[in-house]
Length: 371
Ligand SMILES: *Cc1c(COP(=O)(O)O)cnc(C)c1O
Picture 1: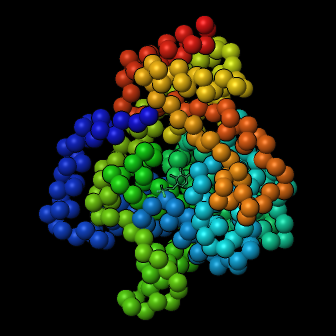
Picture 2: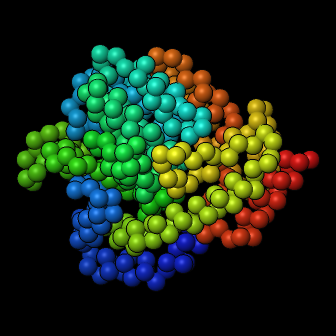
Picture 3: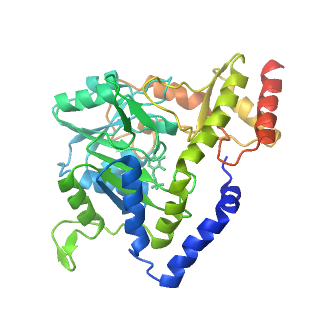
């Protein structure tokens, strides 16, 4: 699905030098590279505050902790997503409320979110899934109307851009009160282990999140808040600074593969290529197709037989997960999310794909679909 080694070999000189510098200086925790990377990524996103942390799941938890929500407060999450947001909400004693998604974009359906709002709703977590922004303009309007916090989950879409109706364009992860991202090795901006960050334009929230991530202290051994220990390693920060320079090129490489796929699969019956919403760019963290009812698993088995990996992101909606089925609430059963779980299939897409590899995947799928 990804070629991490191939990408390393292409960037080897830069990466090796960055790693060597950290080891030579031996400042493994909070070395100068951490601050430097945080500044560089904040500049890339055009935001004032970016606080690195241990991983994207920690980032979600720290973001929620910074908001001072009360147990039992409701947080709206998409029903079709990676589990991290639901997990952080539940861990803090808050109530996750699952809302259906738009099957065209896989992202939260803002109308359904509106219908799920109750007097206890305090926040909403738009997850920008697979590389494209949620429809933020109506979502932000809804949140403003009901005084809800917006926490963007930008783990899969960092670098995608949202266009507002007045022509304004903003980077994903810069529109809500807080955004989080992950630098897990397969993510669009990735390190060689775990890493994550919280992003905000709000100075007070930035200060609180920085404190929470550092044991709730500003001054050493003086703990003002209940916190945790969540840091980005210096080594990972050094690697990320190198990768950030290539981020737009990474996006372009995946976008080119996606264009070829979409052209090639256009006429295949029973296949639906991903939709590009007119309000967002798509960086194709995943190229996720929808396969006609009942045909997905057979296609996946066939691809496997031909040596082509594929993945089901995600096989279960959050409200059907064993750990959450009893605590999660919904206003209306998220049926579209349930249907997606039975029809989605993500094909290989990454920065190192050769034309030959793309051709092989395209031809193999054509042979299957037309037989
Ligand atoms: C990967 C991911 C996370 C969690 O990131 P980790 O760094 O693995 O904790 C959160 N949300 C989404 C949408 C993700 O894809």
